[in-house]
Image (tube, rainbow, N blue to C red; front, side, top):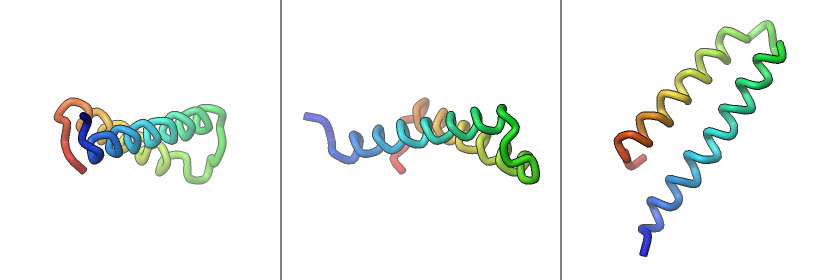
Length: 60
């Protein structure tokens, strides 16, 4: 039986990655030019967080 916290963490990471991908897609389309650089930094930080959690199975 899977730990409910692990399942919730997996769902959270999946949703976060979907949102990150949506953000990146919209940045690539040229949306929000006035805050593009800040959003790009945010997208990179989210990506690093996701990778770190997946590689280390870190509990958040």
